[in-house]
Image (cartoon, rainbow, N blue to C red; front, top):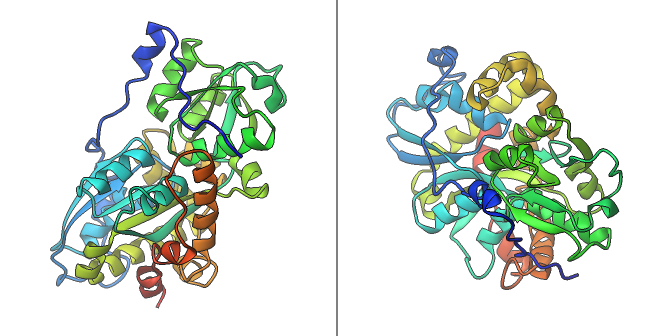
Length: 353
C-alpha cells in the first residue's frame, strides 16, 4: 500500500481563509452545569496535591462529563488541575512533545505516531475513552454520490493526523482510489465554513461537526464502523507522560476512577450525562444522545483486561503503525514490545479494584 499522506491541494484564496488551524490550545470557557458542586461519587482524597495539566477535545465521551461536573476537583480537593482544549490529536501530540501536558485525549492514530519513530515520546496509553463507530463518518454534499468511486477528483476534508484521516486513507486504499481524491487538511471547526462556501465536496470528521454537516444536507457515505469491520479500528484514548505517572500514581488512580464513573453514567443515565456533555459541546442534550450511539464505552475492569490495556491493545497499535508507515506518516514501525510498553493497565486496574 502507498498513499501520499501529505497530499494537500492548493485551491483559491477563499479556501486559504478557512485553512487556519487553532495554534496550540485554548482554555475552555465552560466550567460546569451547576450540578458540579455535588460531592465526589466515592471517598475523596485530600492527600493528593498534584499539579496536573489535562488536555481534552470536543468529543462526546466521559471526559467531558468529568470536566463539566468538576469531579476531579471534588475527589481531589487539594490538587491543582488545569484543563485545556485542543482541536485535534495532532495538536495534543505536539503539546506532549513540548512538555506542556500531563494527560491528554487523542485518537489511536496520533497516539501511535507519538509512540513511533521519529517522535518516540515517553508516554503511555492509560485509558480508552471510546471505541469509534459511526460517530466518525464520511459525509458527501452531492446526494448522487453513492459509492467511494464517486469521489474521484473531488475535494475531501479531514484533520490530518487524526483517526478520521486514518479511516479515510484506509477506505480509499481498500477502494483502489489512492491518489485519485484531493485531500484537504482542515480542523473540525473550519470544516462547516468550507462546506457552506462550496469549497469542499466531502469530509470525514466526528461529532459535533459531523452532525452539523448532515443537518446542512450532507449524506453519510461510509463510517469508521465500516473501516473497523474491514480491519482498521480506531479509538479515542488518553495518554500520559511516563514520569508524571510514576510521580503521581495516586492522582492517576483517582483520575481513572472518575473516568470509570463517567462511563457508568453513559451506560445507565444517558439523559443526565447528555446534559453535561451538551454543556461542554455547546449543544442541546437531545442532540447529544444520538451522537452517543456512535461510540462504545468500556468500563475500567474491561479496559484493564488482557484484550485491551492488559496487553492486547498493543496489537492494534502495531497494526496502526504498519499502516501509517505505508502512508509515510511515521519513520518506522517499532517492535510489538515497544507498543506493549506504550500502554499501562495500572490506573484502570486500580479504578476497578
